Image 1 (spheres, one colour):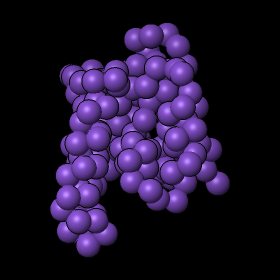
Image 2 (image 1 turned 90 degrees about the horizontal axis):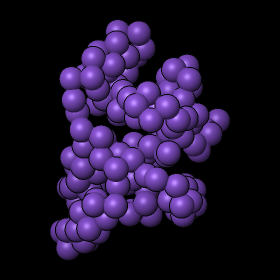
Image 3 (image 1 turned 90 degrees about the vertical axis):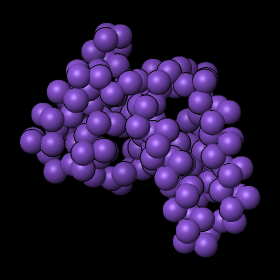
Length: 143
């Protein structure tokens, strides 16, 4: 299973550097999982681009709508007490923001619950390094 954090999901809808890598990842027929937090983070990213003048209000709304239309196709990991417990451990052991710890905790929980390796798609270098330390396969591999 592949787990996408918000940094990877945003690139699916908004043309940024490395967006082609994300399309290739999403083109894979494997299951795609996200954390419920991603729903808010992606929407916030599109709203921020509008506030920064990078997109119009209509473009922002179209980006949000496209993501919302695709949301039912994702396996959504809820922020449960188990996710919070793992995230608490991660913020103590690693220099992570709380939102990044929640993303990684959700991915770790999916791996534990399914007994399968989770491929973690992120473009956040710090989060990628911590995920690797935690034994998660990170895609794309960032230098």
